[in-house]
Length: 230
Length: 230
Image (cartoon, rainbow over all chains, first blue to last red; front, side, top):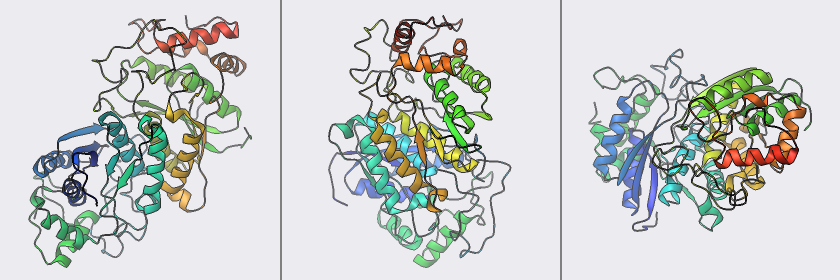
């Protein structure tokens, strides 16, 4: 990434490992980072609290939470209480098909909200923790999708009409989970604060059984590190 | 529009004249219409009630309201209570520049939400009441923007990966307001229920002074018709 001092950027931050690492990479790249979390009717609010903590501890210039309730279209275990989150799946099953935790059009909605805020901030750079390795079946985690969103953003905004070009940065796109863990450690991300679990206990502890917990555990294992959040 | 019997479509419905006419055109075109309203922190909830009435009276198969609060980025008079809605502007001033009632990335956010629901419904057709005549300065009301969103939607979704092509229909795009009024009358839209005003009174009556009221009044005047909502 080319360091571009004092350029503003909007970084999507969920409170998990991937987006915290993305945020730290944006700051390392010299951007003034405005962190955006989206409350889309997730099962737990703790993730959003962690997002705010992560943004603050990494040095974001500001943090906002947009409430955008996606439960009006059921069809995802992350927004529909009637659909159970899968537990105890083999790691090789994860990502081989689109799971019930998939939120339809999720990255398009998240990037659209980031674009709206970017337009107000005068930012032309958006960061998202999309990853094509763990979730190879997700259409909106592909390079060509992200390049298409850049073209859309440039056409959709006054800044674009006036000549600006939008960039969607997805620095984790082709990293393994182990590599993401190593990057997070290198950048000094406070991993104990990050929460990847889809359905943590009332005490805030990760369940250890959902797909997100399993992928994270494999990442730490392959990186030869202990997860400080456990 | 080619009549395509029993194909589902998602139609964005605000409760105003334009989206009601768009909905009626979608039904005339043979689509099974699923109407989507988005509560993005508008100043009044009445618009959303009218949207539900309009959807029902036009014969929509279903209607949902998505709550997506955009007030986290201030910068629009429609979502930020600190910014007054302009009143009493000359009709020729309206649309000559991007006004304070512009919501950043609005159509991108609305279409993204529609896309999420479409993915759940198995629909590949989205309808939006965008108009390039009254608001020629809006980048996201241009034909090329809408075509770009189609490409994005096709890349963003499993249906697209599997070979479906998404269409964004904006049948009012190049219609004058007078033509839209005439179409609404021809299609039997219950215009008395539609509400275009940005800031109606507590009794639900339009203010008559905001840009939306002025454009609507000109449309009826040029069509030689009385507005039944007054």
